[in-house]
Amino acid sequence: MYPNGTMKALTLSYDDGVEQDKRLVEILNKYHIRATFNLNSGIQTGASKWESHGCPIRRMNIAGLPALFAGHEVAVHSLTHPHLQELDADTVRNELEQDKLNLERIFQTPVHGMAYPYGTFNQSVIDIAKACGLRYSRGVLSTHSFDLPADLLAYQPTCHHKDPLLLQLAQSFLDMEQPATPQVFYLWGHSYEFDVDDNWHIIEDFCKLVAGRDDIFYASNAEAFGVV
Image (cartoon, rainbow, N blue to C red; front, side, top):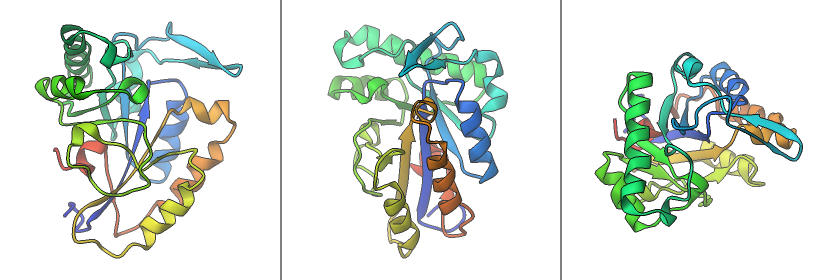
């Protein structure tokens, strides 16, 4: 049971620490919805930038992020965003362990979880993540489910924010009677996608639909998964 007495939790997870996170945080705070932001501390700088379909994307400088993400969770996304399953074990450990240590130092808070870069991983990566003290980690495959997995280090989310079933799934979650075991609506994405696709209304509509319910715990990933 969650702190507010319910068995239903809503949590969001957004990757890469990009400039568009500022607008996303503003929307989330407006509706009192919490998220986890997954950061690459080795390249968390405005010099890390690229384009997608003509849209400029830039990571934010680390200095202002503790204030921006206040009230939300930060989590590991590796130092440099590689395909972890392609690396040797020592390099994977360095990518995860050092990112965790950096984020704990910068944000002055324990870091419990992670999102896998590109959503890819294998059992070796899972084992290393566990050895680094990480308690959960997320891939990118939509389950359209609210069930907690047997292994929190192999978590696959409910859906991406562009999933055509997003609002249908949200309504099903809202309509669900209080379950006997915890159920989690887990939404993920990249905030820059809202600029690329010109569809910020999607997250605004979603938040407006799900916000303000007494029967839902609005949680960070770690809180939703019961690891804090």
